[in-house]
Length: 346
Ligand code: DC
Image (cartoon, protein in one colour):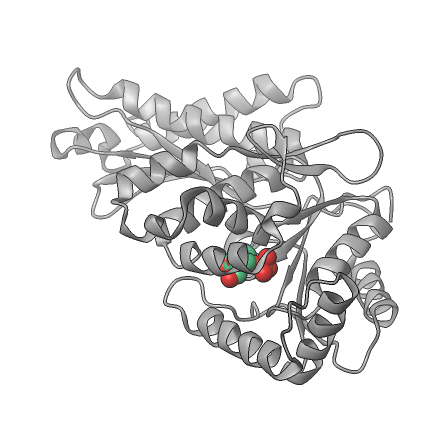
């Protein structure tokens, strides 16, 4: 398995199902990184507070941008989740942080910002990404997707024992903990943005009657079974860039006439950027055959898209290809025509 890049493994599921322990253990077993996306929501919950719900979009976006998340190697063991270079610590493991996290997790702007940060981290290295929307929204192209579930009473019992072991019960009863878990489930499953649900291609694992080692075995076996013998150059996502096309520039696309087609020119510009970056390895096959340029929205938007080859280099090359294609188009517009290029990896 070591000669093949694992890419992203997504692990979603409701509160108290043992996702964190399992995601961390799975990452350890496979020698890849672990990304706890709940910790990112908890950090923003604590930093921004419940007032985040009343902020206008621009303010909220700016406040999110103040918190730059990275996975950093701090010597020995797993890379550590950091916010602005500082490790995220136990301060987020409180009931208050959990409550604030579920408040801010309902805000579409904040979710969008965190999802971008999560994809950027996933483009850098193989990892187990744990959360609620990893397989459905953040990494829809992940090769391995798991959705862990367990009966509510089993999850409540596990949470009770865990809090008791940490001396953090604070007088809570098992019934209260179960009620809290059921309430949070209801919120997570029914919220309008990115509700908790399994991706259609997720492997659903019911952990109710298994211990941690039993579940871990199921996960490792599933990863091994789905892992190809050699890297099939399977894409790790799609890179896309776009430029708005003003009505007076549509003629530049030549209506598809050979030799007059800005779409062909844009594609060639993208390929040549990828070739420059990929030198001396040669242009990756996904980009050579998969880079496509087109117009959508009745000619109001130019887009360039290509699959992202596995690995950090692949992401960089794919982005350069689609950005150069879009730049070729934008630079063909006359002075004064809009030139803003949006580029991202999904
Ligand atoms: O897994 P956790 O308890 O640390 O998550 C904290 C909150 O963040 C919880 O309300 C669910 C939310 N969350 C989310 O909406 N999407 C994620 N990818 C991860 C967590």
